[in-house]
Each structure stands twice: as C-alpha cells, then as structure tokens.
Length: 432
Image (tube, rainbow, N blue to C red; front, side, top):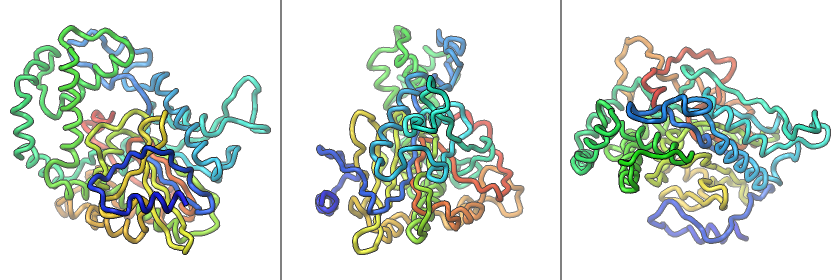
C-alpha cells in the first residue's frame, strides 16, 4: 500500500527530520480510525506595534494593531477547505457539534481565524442553511481569558530556571558571535527606527512591522533595502531559535514546549484505548511561538518562523495488527499537500510506544520543581500545574478525536477545574 511504501521509504534514519515529498500524500484511511491533533497559527494580520519613526502608526491600519486582515481570512478559509478535502471520509458533510471542538486563544486574530477556518470546513448544507443569502453557519469557538491560558502561550513565564537558561544563552559563544556579527547593523537599525535599544531579542518586532507593511503594499522607508530585510529576517528567525534552542535545548524544551507535548502524548495515549466516541476533531487556534515551542521539543523545527495559517498535524492510526502509530505532517503552504515530519530516531508512521519513548526526555516530570520555583513562595499564577489537566486525559472527549492547533498557545480547560493564573503583561506583548 502507499502507507507501507511511505514507511519503507522513511525507515532508514535519514539525517533530516523534515521530509518534503515530490509526490502527493494520500488522505488518511478512515478504516484506520485516525485521531488528529493539529496546531495552527492565525492568518495574516496587521503589525502588533510600530517603531517610533514609523510613518505608519496604528491609525494606518483599518482595525488597528494585531488584527486579522482580509488576506488572513482568505488563508484560513483555504486551510479549512483543504482540511475538509483531506478528511472528507472522516468528517460528516454537515456540521455535527459532537464531532468537533474548537479552542482558541483569547485574541481577536486567533478567534477570527478559527471562525473563518470553520466556514471553509463546514459550509451549510440542506437544513443547516438558515438564510439563502448567507453561505455560512455559526459554529462555537471556545476560549479562556488570556491571563488564564497557560498551556499554549510561549515562552512560559514564572520559571526561574528558564530565565537563568536564557541568561546563560546570552553568554554562549553562538549568541555572542551573532551579536558581534550584527553589532553595526543593529546600531543602524536603532538609529533609523528611533528605538532606545535594538538588540538581538527585540529586533524581531522591526522585521514584523516592516514585513506586514510590505505585504500590504505600503511604501517602506528608503533605508529598508532588500539586504536590510534579509538581515532582519535572519535575526528574527534567530530570536525563535534562542527561545527554545541554541544552548541547553533539551532542558529549555522540558520547561517550555515539552509541557504542551506532554499533554498531547497523554491525549494520544488515551485516544488509543478509548472506543466508540463521536468526537473526531479538536482544533486549537494559536500563534507562531506555540508551533515553534512544540516543534522544538519534537526536534523538527526548521529554524524558520512558521508562516501564517501554518498547521502542525498529528494523526493516530490503528494498524492492521491492532497496534497504533503516530504520523506528523506540516501544512505551511495551502497550494501544496502537507509534508511529513519525522521524529528523529523513528519512521514516518512511528509506533506509539516508540513515539512516547523518544519524546520522554523533553517531558517535564514536575514542572514547578524543574523550574526551581522557591518552595513556600506565593503562586505567581504564571503556570497552572499539569495536574489540572489530568481529568482531560481521562475524559472520553479525547477518544477518536482529531486535534487542530492554530499556531499559538492554548489547551483544553475543563469547566470543573477552577484556575486562577495570571499571565504577565510583558509576555502578552510578545505574542504575535
């Protein structure tokens, strides 16, 4: 079968964990009862902020900063249509509330991305058409307040050990060499933008602003040459690498993306042993840092910022012998098929037991202890203990489900679990 051929093709330990095929991948076989876990980023948006000398301040954007654009709406409409086509044999042709659950971060752009994505997946048919002039139907998208959303907002705050690792990273040879290489360039950017401190970790926002303006056909200042944009892009990507890699990557991942991966692996394991469930898809609409944190923990991060409406996909398959395997795909271009991501040390359709074993090194056992949070200190509210999520794994909601995460943070929150978590304002400002 095409399934076995793909397994044989990837069985050898290829040095690359990302494989971009030259052939069209088959849609998942519904007889294999796939359970799908997807994480996607919101669509194209306005910049989250401007720099002091920027000729385009917030008033230049129809809805202000950080808002989903019409182009972003089109991107997620297309992704939703692609998901409908890919899973046409798994999903009902008409919307069924028992089949899908959608969770978003509490940002306008992620909420709206989820809504338009659903419009592409579930155009109304038959009795679901409530107005012949409106080719759309309302489908619920759930969210919790930003200060209570603790699983998908990265980098997670309130972790002293992670902050220490970041300080050590800034003293590493790789970081110091990059800082030295781009010292004059950063001084030029600081002078042109009017920023008080354009450094290796803050300059991403300059690239973000200019990139958004460029994508919306705004005239860039004369100093912004193609060479300048290229260098800003390199530094922007490096800032993502610094958060979850470059120095002591495994420990960083245990304190960051490993938290999300832990929950996903628990849900995958629970889905493998639960039967006769109606839920087939769970969707998470989030941000680029969510995708990067997750892919870094899985060691499949390309080093490049996830594109708008990019989608990381987990698919759980029941094999002919009754065992289970996990396959991962990445959809970062709606004009092509998603391409496989191979967990280092395994094959494309990785046996579930191997998947769990290989990801164990980045799964935190006790996040608070590993973060070296002082005992007896007040709960900072920056992280909600993983125990709060246990009942989700035990819940039958997860059986035969497919999870879609829209590139940025969030997790399933049980109504019966009361959380009082505060997310620092300084972290909220980093969310893109």
